[in-house]
Image (cartoon, rainbow, N blue to C red; front, side):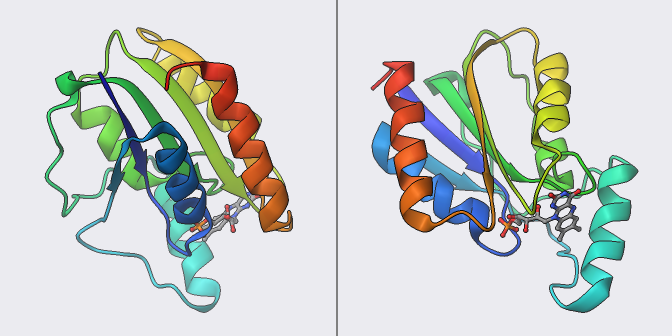
Length: 159
Ligand SMILES: Cc1cc2nc3c(=O)[nH]c(=O)nc-3n(C[C@H](O)[C@H](O)[C@H](O)COP(=O)(O)O)c2cc1C
């Protein structure tokens, strides 16, 4: 059975980790794209993005979601927004039946919030087996991030 790496990324930090994870797992990638993206520049980004996360928005996605039955492992990656996962991830986990899977969560952030985010995801996706969680601060070196991903994946033994 295959692995799917599902992620949302506004500014590519999460995307770069998702690419490494998918390569390591030899898995498929699904980048969630909201139909209406928040502004990327300036303070508006934090205002709109933060509000949207706090209010648990579920933006409509451009994506066609593949048949999740064909994956036994799903890795979900998100930036931390206002201490939680992003609205596009909220849409994905709300609109799709995710049950009986092996799951991993990873998050990128400026400095914190990942622990709470993972707790929330564990609660919502409790009908699955959680393989592990990992987070990355923006300030960490790329090399360090790659090492961390490799160690994380090797613990799963699901290749
Ligand atoms: C709307 C918004 C809210 C954010 N809230 C937090 C936060 O609560 N805690 C934090 O450590 N970083 C926060 N950040 C920083 C991002 O989590 C961080 O830069 C992340 O790596 C961005 O991922 P991306 O490049 O894949 O979009 C926020 C960024 C945005 C745009």
